[in-house]
Length: 251
Image 1 (cartoon, helix red, strand yellow):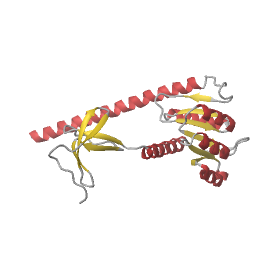
Image 2 (cartoon, helix red, strand yellow; image 1 turned 180 degrees about the horizontal axis):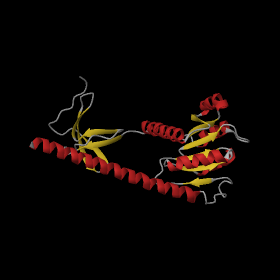
Image 3 (cartoon, one colour; image 1 turned 120 degrees about the vertical axis):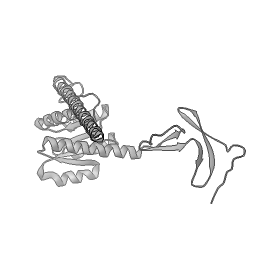
Image 4 (tube, helix red, strand yellow; image 1 turned 180 degrees about the vertical axis):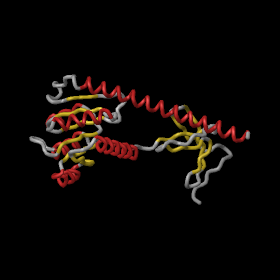
């Protein structure tokens, strides 16, 4: 009987904890949504004609990424702003390729979403110029059903992917989140790994892209014994083999 009561108590505790966590998560999501709706409302009332005639900018706190969208159809840009801002992205939109390139010279963006068919500079021109000005930027082509082949062709010039018009809110958010994960993974793989010196008291596992080196003694693949000591919290020092120790190379 006691065992049953203990099990029931634990089960109730876990259930209550889960309910509280879900409630807090939902409240946080609602708070963020209200903040983004307010940012969207304020951003559309601001004037940025000094940077670009058709520029509309909406910035959110701690954005997932910064996006520049260019399309000669205002209704498409309205959709991009509303959908992506509420999903947690900061978004700049302009209606011409020339304006997009002028902004790329002034600001750092993570993504450029560009329409393929535009008067003046088209999406292919924007892609080439964007990759020239900002080689690390990721370009996404916006295309209609009849121009998918051209959009795929544009990927040869550096476009990361393409999105078809018309698109649903869920389709755009899911695609953008997926591309963001790809971008973050690519940046992480290109970054040199960090080295962390472990102390005997350390028990936590190393984060991704972090190499853990044991303090005291380190054995390399060549069977070389060295002493590793902590000099301070920001630098490492590898001392010579202490007297009485041994150093052995090869098998």
